Amino acid sequence: MEVTARTRVAGVIGDPVRHSLSPVMQNAAFEAAGLDWVYVAFEVPRGSGARAVAAMGELAIAGLNVTMPHKAAAASACDELSAAAARLRSVNTVVLREDGTLYGDSTDGEGLVRSLAEEGVELEGRLVLVIGAGGAARAIVPSLDHAGARVTVSARRPEAADEAVVLTGGATAAYEQLGDAVVEADVVVNATPLGMAGEPPPFDPDRLEPRHTVVDLVYDPAQTPLIEAAAARGSRAVGGLGMLVHQGALAFTLWTGEEAPLDAMREAASRALTERS
Ligand code: NAP
Image (cartoon, rainbow, N blue to C red; front, side):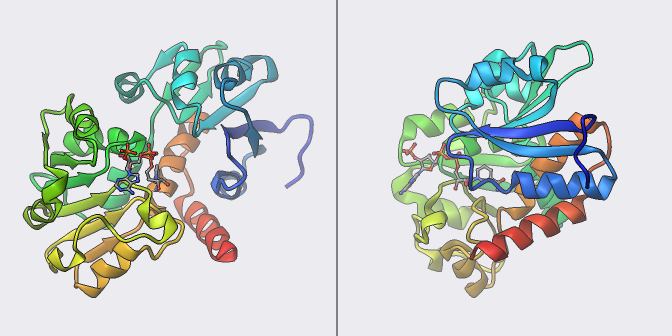
């Protein structure tokens, strides 16, 4: 692909940002879709997120992804927010619209729901236990609820679990009795970063059964201790790569108005992860 003076620019802002898979994934998507776009990573220090988003108009940056620590600041810099982003006061995607206004969305929750649908995981009427109550958990809980799941959140800080379910009418489960909540659930979603450091889940994996679907939002490494334990117990195991691809695909469509080339995105992200390990 040749970058010219006409090439449109999209990117990701974050700090740190050099580990991001989004440039590899989105550039593969632009290429597969035959679009004259390029995607770059901008290392923007804490405190400068809102100014970076506001500068999109000046620099004609057509789209941005937003990662830690700028998600709330980026939301405050947008002229209009999707319902999901307004609820969370947090955005991971910003679109520079033709009239110069900035539209913010949060695509993580819908990204997870789409990745589970792709895997054939039924959510309607099923009991989904979300472990952890940070940014990712807060983003996915309303989307799981909207998809018809009965959602329970369990986190080491009970007040954070309360905040994560407050808008859904969902329940919370005591962290001290997490194993019992796992047994009751149909789908167990680990929304803590424990797997990134190779740490085991905060419950005894022997409580898992073949009827469980186990989801780890972590995608690097692909084989987290939870994913390995779930597979060993005969449970269905789903890693975080599908969510990453689908949240990115939703952003791609918001920026370009075109359907995202999912296979190209998945392949690029997966190749980059393999090369890293
Ligand atoms: P976060 O905002 O920092 O929240 C992390 C949550 O995990 C908090 O509830 C935190 O509890 C809890 N936690 C952290 N360490 C723990 C421990 N040792 N024991 C028990 N609980 C612990 O992070 P996040 O943004 O929600 O991200 C969570 C994970 O999801 C990350 O690994 C991230 O890479 C992954 N993720 C994946 C995707 C994807 O596309 N696949 C998208 C978003 C996030 P405290 O609040 O008490 O610290």
